[in-house]
Amino acid sequence: MDLKKGQNIIDVFDALLQSTDPALAHVRVAADAWTLTEIVGHLVDSAANNHQRFARLISGNLEQFPPYDAEIFVTVQQYDGCDFAEMAKFWRQYNWMLMHIMRAIPATALENMWQRPDGAKSLRTLVEGYFEHIEMHTGQYRERLQRVTTHILS
View 1 (cartoon, helix red, strand yellow):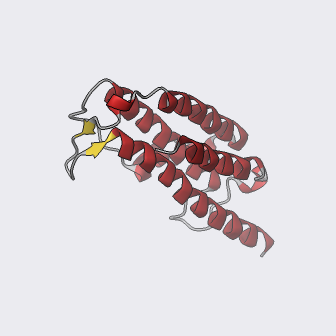
View 2 (cartoon, rainbow, N blue to C red):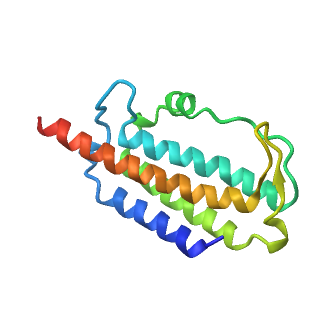
């Protein structure tokens, strides 16, 4: 579990958010495509869900946890109606807290298991997966930003 690499992944996405023109944040390039603000909202959901998973797994194994449906959550929470700069700030602060929690995970807790319908996952795997998820959405965000910019200019 490389927390320095994880912090770098967070910093890269945060820099991308800070460099985004807020005027582009609510442009929808297709009916089924999230806006930039909705991508950030989804990553806030990811932080919130993982916050609960991490905290619960630090203290022992986790038998059940409610499922997460990204499309429904993004829609019902109406992230596109949020101020982009505030969403970006909220994501940044939530990740500050998660990094604090991750640094405090005792080595003995890293192999605590979350029992999922598709198989067990360790706390270590969830932490590593959290950073991979941000990295994947960084690529999606860059691609969407390019499409939005092209859409605005055409």
